[in-house]
Image (cartoon, rainbow, N blue to C red; front, top):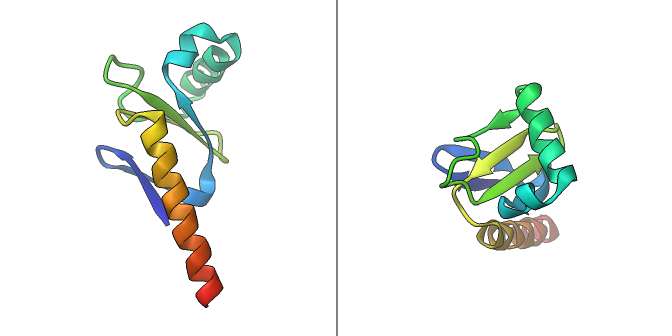
Amino acid sequence: MYVHLGGEIVVPVLDVVAILDVRLVGSSEINRELVDRAVAEKRLRGGGLTPDCKALVVTKQGTVYTSGISAPTLAKRMTHLQQSANAWEAET
């Protein structure tokens, strides 16, 4: 299953490690370092850290996606998709 991050970006649910509120980037040295490294290593995807960016999604591969969808909304989508995946596995 995939989660839609906005625009034309979708990622596999099982690859998502973290969903961060973009407002935390400026107030946290570690989060800023995460973004800086992603930019330096060309692992930042999406529209970049624009005023429209509301969340960062980090994957197992280390890719960081920007999203115009809020972190709580993305978290709800993830929960719903994980519940659906678990129900599917239980039936098969």
